[in-house]
Amino acid sequence: MKTKNLKKTITRWVLRIVLFFFLSSLAATIIYSFIRVPITPLMIIRLTEGLFSGDPVGIHKKWTPIKEISPNMVRAVVASEDQLFLEHNGFDFNAIDKARKHNEHSRRKRGASTISQQTAKNVFLWPARTWFRKGLEVYFTVLIEIFWSKERIMEVYLNVAEMGNGYYGVGAAAPHFFNKKPSQLTKAEAAAIAACLPDPRRRNPAKPSPYVAGRRNAILRHMNQINPIDFSK
Image (tube, rainbow, N blue to C red):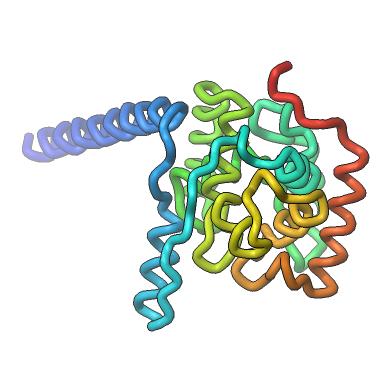
């Protein structure tokens, strides 16, 4: 009898936790569809790491509406990170399949996360390579694709993505690296920032290493090959 009651109690609490998570995540997604994201788990993690290491970096960010961000920056991240951004519903299954086949035979792992997936991870989750975290990323990606427009996804991505050591979003990165407003970034400058995104804490777009310069030039070529990003369609 006691075992039955214990099972019922556990089941009841599990259902409550699942329901609370679903409702709270749904509410947060809807709220963030129109208000600025104030802080992210990664910002807190980086701040804490800096404090414990004795090398605090702080949190440098300045929310910038997408209309005040250079179209070059939008085009650069699409060319670099997700060329089918306007076409898919959050997942690029062809890229996922290619990455899976590559990773089966290579030590250097390749990712296939779309900008939507990266935005979901940046806003709601923490950096980790686990199936549980990946499952949550899929869940939040579906939510933002349902409740946010593509323009909103891009706006949030460009405001919360880590773009330097303690710098988040192009509103902070543009003046820090190039002494410019985000609206003033040239193609080359935007491509340089995008080239550093895989490892922004160790790379400097204003002083690119040969590797970053090579990535920047490749992104510039891709930028010239894709159509201008038009969110009005």
